[in-house]
Length: 264
Ligand SMILES: O=C(O)CCC(=O)C(=O)O
Image 1: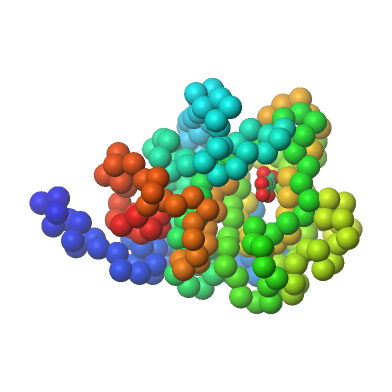
Image 2 (image 1 turned 90 degrees about the horizontal axis):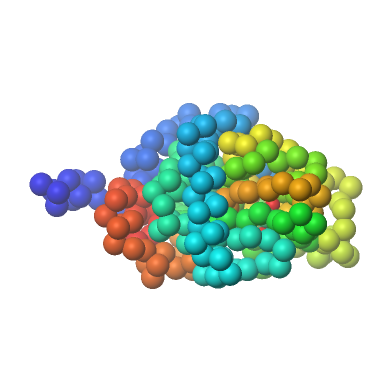
């Protein structure tokens, strides 16, 4: 019976995966699409309900404790910040992040073609640390029209003026070239920069060609977030999911989720 179910649910393309995961024509409103197109990002409040939020915070701290100095090593470590990586395999609480219909609809809206998850990581800057230069999550110059990467930030704490909220330059994803063509010092403030200030439980979805970066945590508390990153399907993943996928994860998730991870 199990085999039969899997055959009938076989996913051949991204449109089918999205359909099975609940994405419809109306998952994104016109205003949300416009925000993604014009500003390059969209802030969605109240995505993570109280119970899920409590669980995601608990898992964050448990993994930091368990992994210690190795935390984040699978992808990247950064001085003055706590990081985690390969979260797909580290708790089932993450299943609802990379399969979230609003997020998937936004990724498809931006990329307009086949895509897959690239990585699911975590980051929070320690007090006094965290400032990053403006960057896109893409190393090549762009034409400002065709896009290859989308990122999202899942807020586990309120993002405030003080605690290292992400800064963005609205509309910069449409500028041809790259940050360094426009800013001598990408670490400097930009006259049009905006901080993503929002309550815990919100999700920021952004065209990852948008110039963005973390800011210094000038508070004494945490500013924890998960980063769920996608790329067009032909590109290598930031973390090779086929290599890292654990049997327990594979067996738990749906064929459509496996398609998103590119592990089917
Ligand atoms: O956590 C943030 O505020 C942004 C992090 C970021 O852009 C990065 O690490 O590349």
